[in-house]
Length: 84
Image (cartoon, rainbow, N blue to C red; front, top):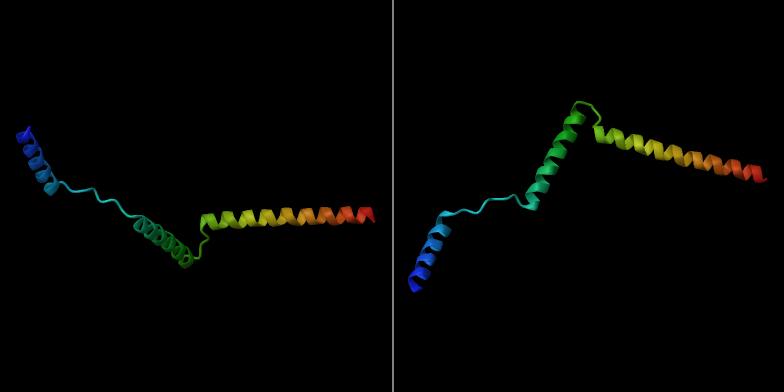
């Protein structure tokens, strides 16, 4: 058993010297990469004087919400005038 144990230890030592852990990017690296891509796209769009697709969608959503709010206000004012 002792011989087996020493052989196993020897094998483990050799493998640990030659085997390399896979390098995975850290969370910080992923965030930096995402911000780099976002910033590059943003400034490219500004340089070309274009609107980014998600910004256009956001502005359309904002317009829709505001128009719905205005309609509710108009309905409320109309209702108040009907009560008077």
